[in-house]
Image 1 (cartoon, rainbow, N blue to C red):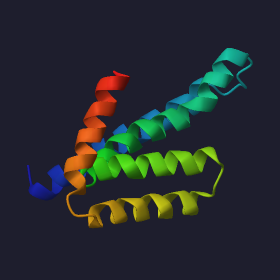
Image 2: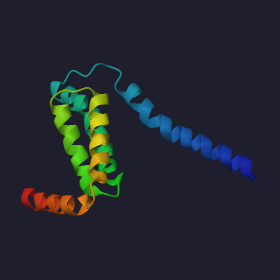
Image 3: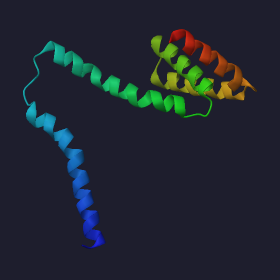
Image 4: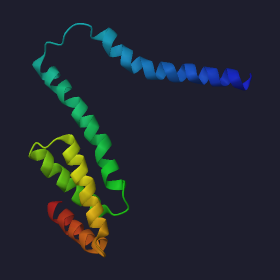
Length: 121
């Protein structure tokens, strides 16, 4: 079997694997969902998926875990006070940048984060 044919078969398989999970819900659930419980559950699914994809990336995007923790706290506080997404993201990045500028910030912030994690857990 030639290499080009193998690539073509791989692309076809990847297309099917990507398309089937998107097409099945449309074909199986063509009627409107009437159950309030299922509708409320499906309403929150995008937020839960977004959070599960975002939070690990937040804490491992920088080598300084404590700076990432400060950025997360800033972002959560601004989001709680209903600031726009651009303001939340810019202030969180600025907080991380400023914490990384402080000499020795990783040591004392890491000890604070360990104390907080021991207290909360």
